[in-house]
Length: 193
Ligand SMILES: C[S@@+](CC[C@H](N)C(=O)[O-])C[C@H]1O[C@@H](n2cnc3c(N)ncnc32)[C@H](O)[C@@H]1O
Image (cartoon, rainbow, N blue to C red):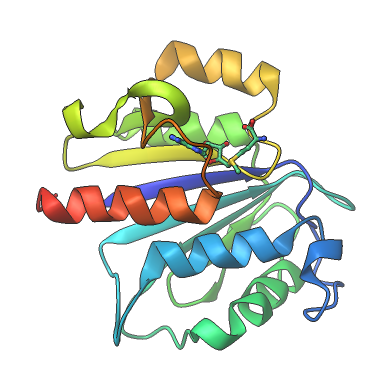
């Protein structure tokens, strides 16, 4: 299973946002692009991928949304924003709630999510332009890739993450978060991971 952790300092933590104005919802537009790159193929979806979205925006941070596409999940590329909005609305205090098959929401901090993945024996990679070339990196089957939003990861989180994760790069240009997810997916596909 390949996993992505997307951190956003600004993405809204309640469902009361307008799906026609995603930029105003703490750059929810970037979130939607990341979801599409993580799961959608031409006429197919990836069932080998799990995505963790960590939102630190207002009004009730932090929120951890976990998505894995299963045959029971009715997901459309045209309404990813609607899916995220409904999940945020269904959050229940003190619970990890399965809102749709394979889709969960809970209150959990970025580092609690990372630490859990580490305890499960996953290999954590931090995606950073200055890291080691992904094409030269050794990557095991149970791998986790962490990336930030348009502002990147906050300095404090970055410093701590660097002590537990291996830093890898997909090239010397600064790409959109969703582009990076596509490149990583492609690299893992090429390696049959
Ligand atoms: C749009 S970029 C963030 C730009 C932000 N201004 C910064 O300086 O971090 C979004 C995320 O994509 C990832 N990223 C962008 N370019 C990358 C690259 N060449 N290699 C690896 N990760 C990259 C990083 O994790 C980054 O946080």
